[in-house]
Length: 290
Image (cartoon, rainbow, N blue to C red; front, side):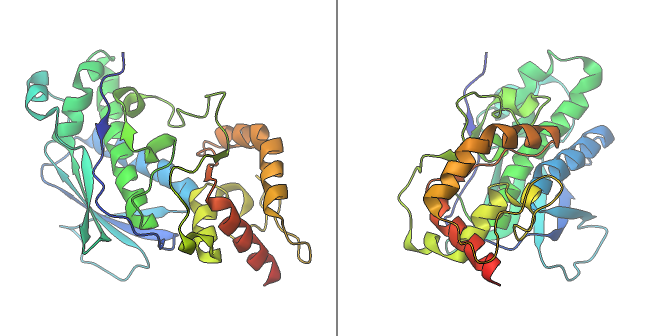
């Protein structure tokens, strides 16, 4: 049975997204992590963030000075990132799993992950797993909380999606599942889902559309500028502007094959809010005109 969901820490709403690409990920562990946990943590974070266009160079704060990077995030891991006795669970089961810092309403590139709280949250289910899998599973769980906070840092927004690691809450089952894309098998899943909030005037710009394109998973298959790749066709042809209604109709027609291709490539399934469509089409039309 899935236990009560725990909310992850979010503390700001800032609609202007950061650019994505190569980034430095500076880490600080308050207690030395178990080697298997650390390796699983790094592999899972890299796999989760790659579909969003983020590729990390992992650097320890204690070992390397800060250098010039276009994008930087600093993540502090508190507690002990290792499998141990279940006695800790009762003391930390209600704590936040992770959170992102902010100043004057602006999301800062600093996040904290509570390894003790994560272990306490998944402890009962983790101990039901084979002993040789527990450290890897703990590392993956820590990575999924970490990726959740990194998405907020690099998108510059506290908004959540309806699926995957960017959901507002993560269950124990989701943290321990072998397959990251735990929602794409839902037969009711759609690329375009109902808007949870009213659209902001700023969300109708090509810049907002570029963010929707990147974080909706489009760039992974169609290229950074919708130029097309071996995974997906070109989305724009110069001289033939897209119409929002026609664009949504195309998405609906081809969504099944798009989900299948994403699964085959181990990518997050594409996902767009209704409010994303207008700005996304503006971005695609602007790209084609350049």
